[in-house]
Image (tube, rainbow, N blue to C red; front, side, top):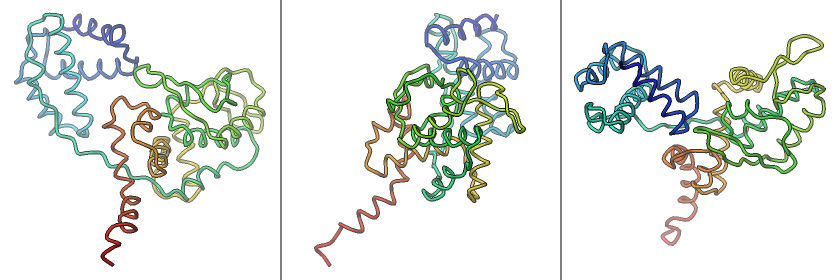
Length: 295
């Protein structure tokens, strides 16, 4: 019986709420784990006591981080809200409190380290040109790695802007720097294949062949590789370049709302995690201008 309600809920997420397949899969896995642990057979089996026991289990018996624990509880609460909407008698979802999660603190690399990473792909091979274009585009646009991998090559790159489909199937415009445009042009000029994808994976060897559209995991590996090659000891990922994109804008005077729109954040609270990184600039302003008349 609970399986039918779950299927209806997942269909509701996809059709009515326009959630992405990935979001749908995350909710399905989270709810199935709860049903299995708590032996849920029907909606009436979902009680406050069972939810509390599941939360204790997540906190004490698993290695899940607070964020992941919170997502599991959010999935249960949203499922209950759906059941209430469908006039199914269940415990009140509003009585479920979420775990307190510490505010995220973003730790980024220095700008000089970034420049060395962007310059790390050397040579004029297809792979080197592709990798340079990937790094420049990530920093120029703040794209998520999944968004970058889904780009197609037959776009008007000369315009300096493209429309991407982000989380929740939301469209937004991102802007491409001159350096990124040149890197993409150099890469595409050397390509002889007819693949639709902007970035593709190649086989190893002296005469590499196209394997298919590049994957997020491959991009993560190449970013890590070039960060080590550039002598950066800290771990660097594609998301690090997204962080650097945002902080670079903020530290050069961009307003938070504009950065929110360029990143594709649904809530400005998500964008506010970057504001502590501008504290250094604010301190320099304070030191330069505060109390000058008292000196």
